Length: 402
Length: 152
Image (cartoon, rainbow over the protein chains, first blue to last red):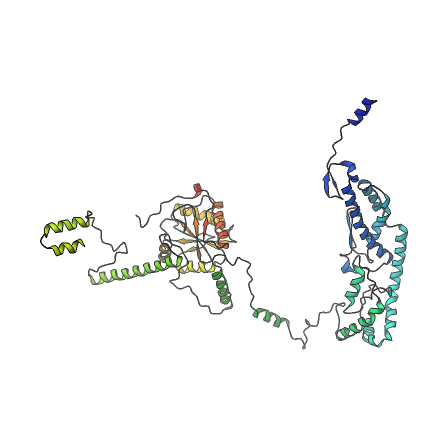
């Protein structure tokens, strides 16, 4: 017995392979006991709470179905953490319809169970993350009712507004305009997209965003909204079309009243000097020169006269080999040498014409006379020889010594 | 024989124009003769690498046998051929390669990449405001020569 117990105890712990924990977001080799670690439990509860809030948003639209505008389809998407897939509402007419169908599907249920079995300690919360078929059926009924109501809601609204003198223009316009049916459902819900200016603000606040449970009270908004829109619609009432019908905006139509024409716009744009915002280092070599040169080149392109600095004698900034000092000094020295060369050349030419011997300067190599090499004689030696020759003439000795 | 890709300059005005029109790019001026063997080897490397460095450098050849170019030959103190002088925004860029003359590159390059490295270093230094840069090449790849002052 004791041997058996020791053997059981001595069973070597199996080395588990490394696997990735989706909740903790790291690799571990703890095996199945990882899900009982306290850190994992904490992260799991946070993980599931986050997904619960997303499901709560979807449940809101389950209870209150609403139309989904095409331009808001991209915003209306959910990532299902159990199935690892993105649910995009492409082509769906009602908000979160695909998400609702997904959460009600059997595959999703299976994935929830699998996830909780792998990561979670208990299987109690499965129902939190799925939508029952009964709820889905209710939702479908509501959606169909919504669709039916929508056809009649437009005319109902029109009849309501016909007696309102403030809304006279609105009434006339809605008859002509092709209405885009968006959420005319409940009195508690937002107004449909029939009104001009504030319609985006109203509809956007209640319909498309997740978690925004704003129930805009139509009765509160209506007077103000209607008042504003009637003012704004008066301008659009005269035009042949509007944004919904796809007509061009009034500032682009070639009317007499228009201040700007396309040709004028282009002319104005041409006149405005294009500032070349260079992102180059302002401390780079020759930055100031480069900026000046760019401006000069632009002026040359435009045909304006430019004072060109490039004379025949222009020389670039260069540090010479045998000169010390600044580059300006080396350029000045070169120019001095050049002038002297010119002078000597002229003098040589004069000599050749007049055939006269002229003393030349010893700077240029060509005009130099061959130097006669003589032995070095010191001053003292010179003085000594002179003293021996003129011993009576002291004045001369003093003069030469000093 | 003129290079297909690289312009050959024979007049002072042409050299002035190319210096003034090359903005925010390194200008590489090769002073040499077509008859010189080293010059031809250098030209070959310059032609092959001109396209690779075209975004930050312009390469041009100067024929030293032309009379109008002699002023630049004297100004740049060019006594050995081929010599390559570097400019950036009309400012002369010096290159310390361990030789006696930092104002130019004398001789040919060992390979294409050496030339590209040198031009890159000059460009980087110029963009940082440096007028003199250190040569990135190892000493064995730098041609050796003796600089004489007025042939003394």
